[in-house]
Figure 1 (cartoon, helix red, strand yellow):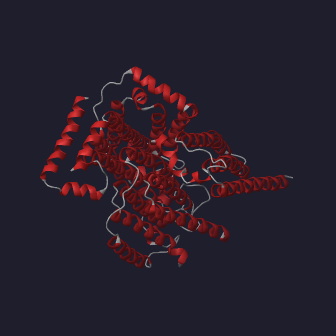
Figure 2 (cartoon, rainbow over the protein chains, first blue to last red):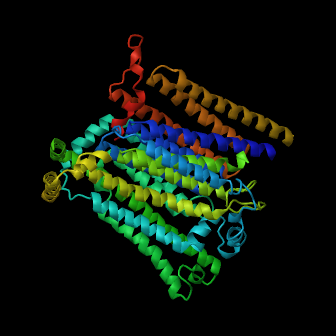
Figure 3 (cartoon, each protein chain N blue to C red):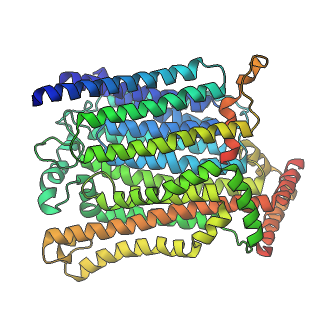
Length: 351
Length: 137
Length: 122
């Protein structure tokens, strides 16, 4: 037991030092491509750190989001905005002063914090014991995180799903372009040239994509019993489709995946989530009180959690797909109108 | 004491590195990366608080009595996904800024903004040019 | 008898885990010591696939009955598919962007490797 704890704290120190090292490297790098790659590594290492801290659900999410989707989005943006950072002209002395003072005060503040792993820390004494001891009787789901996320704090999660949905709308409003119909011959020629270039990648990922989707569904429906749930499943499902877009081109993917349908699914997920709350309200319970959904409270809880996780999964997956499609579509739009935008920026610089 | 507070100190250091990037660097993408670092430091802070010595992951198993605190896990789990969604909006704004100004360096953008009215008019003119082009296709 | 089998299993598992960790470290040393991008990638690509396989087999032996073995073998299958493909994509991207393998004559040419992987992905 003692040796295990020693090794655990050693791993803890190594991972956290790596994080600090990567963050310092990010500060120094001028090449934005390297910065984005380092940010991806940073996400993956923080996911490993979350595993050491027993937060498996969080680690799962961070690995798929921090190391996967966010790196990808930033890469797409870099191809549109250029990959080198210009040096700043003024000296960062003031910034260093602000940062050092704030950091010093915060470190002074940490001396009042409970130590890592202390059992009697205030955070462990209020609601947590109820969740840990009672959730099996009240909700009947082994994964406490899912029980808290989908049942005890369902209203909270509803708000977060709405935020994600709103962010999807925001990206749509900022980036969506009205595009003309792609001609089949153009698509075919792009497709052929890509087929020659990426033959191995295409074949392997074509084999992998169904399994990634299957894994997403497993994560979605196994979330009650192990780490997982709608958020992770949505991101993984979206990543399968994004992989398809990367390798088979945007215009082919547009034919496979109907954008309007995806937008409808995003809205449907939020509505579905809200409707579960309304149904429990109409059945005489509180908003998101699943006990009244079925004659047996535990069965009702299971049903409620299943339904709202489904809503979360739909919304997250389709919002991620919408976001990626819009970024990629914007890039395509810029390439088509490349000369125009170049001219504008030249004019701006000329003045 | 060093081991007990090590995580908190690392959190502070990471947070300050993120803050420094946001204040001192002019490139907007770099600022977003700085924000991500800042955000992750907060995640690390919450997750470190939830840890209990000898506890396991909060998934109920027979014969285990000591579990980590599930509440911070829930808060951070949703925060991560919300974080990527808001980051995407920020990145979308950056793309539009690049289209409108031709640069994503803060100083150059401010320079363009502070120039007198003629250039300002031209900017408007340019963006309307893009809009018109959008309508055409 | 069963006790003996357990000990043998533990020993084999430990051997696999040790070999896997050793290969991981040797891959890391390879990144630092090899002169140019392709040799580095070779060191990491080859040793990592084997190392991951060995560590996974070692872990399977730790808990030979139950769902864990199935999950681990699925992970193993996935790594065997994905690792070589990723190495292939990386090497192809580097070659595509004009990074030549280091031959005796042009030894100066090895400062670019990290930067050159990009444009294909974007």
